[in-house]
Image 1: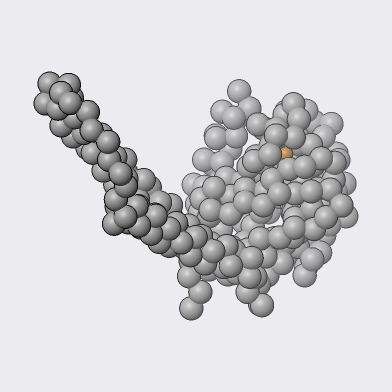
Image 2: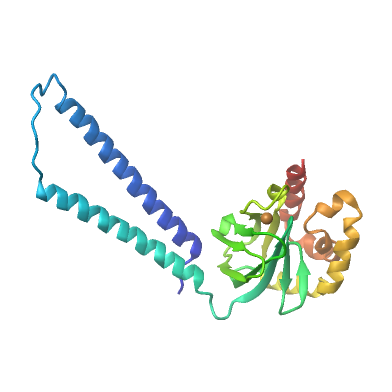
Length: 252
Ligand SMILES: [Cu+2]
């Protein structure tokens, strides 16, 4: 069984933070102790110290072991992130100023909201149309650059249903901070239903184009999806409502 990216990343992060806090405390306590012990009052006559081999070996070997352990955890996480499971479901994502578009090569569907089945390995193929972007799903601890002329990738397995934010993590121009999309993690059955009612790529493109002329609504990332999947969206509990409210507040 592969380790979960979220717990692996959080574990490494916690380990490094714990080491940092312990070191900070050790250094601070030692500093205060020496300040007092070797103050002018307690130690009026200065003396030279000519090396201490045991001490020097200790402060070289211990930190080396510590950083090697950090490297090991980091490397194991990196390996897991780069090694895509063989049967992962592929979704193509394209970044452009200033939105993300998702295509599902297997079904030829396209949407502005990323829908994935819960508990399934998903491979994202990352492209950019204009400038550098960075595809970032904070809740799933995955992030990868989107670079024009190059195909990058990442994978994840969302274990909990729900609605998650997708952001652009690379400054890409004036509206970079608005470059948000939504990840909906839904049960396989609902995903299949969604695929059935979602128009194929070309149709969606037209729908998106026509929405552009409606002004305010065109900013809703899931606009074309909502239009065609009214039944489906209602079944996805509360999440959609929250999504709308949140997006409205983001717009303001
Ligand atoms: Cu961007």
